[in-house]
Image (cartoon, rainbow, N blue to C red):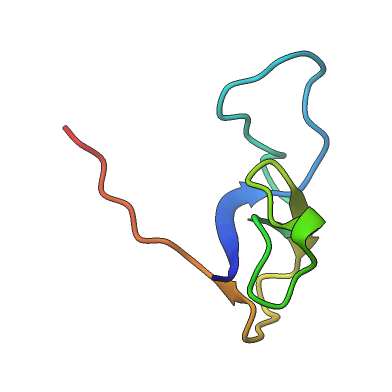
Length: 70
């Protein structure tokens, strides 16, 4: 299991309950979610997010390939 890269740029969300919120329109850091094999249990939550520069990589970052149903 790895931190999952998201397409969203990291930024503040609007207030209130949101479904599939998006981050800023641009930025320097992308969102990573969910924790990884080397994370403490409290970091392994789908709602938890952190930011990372897209140019940085390590063994605990990854991505999931998704196909949208048409």
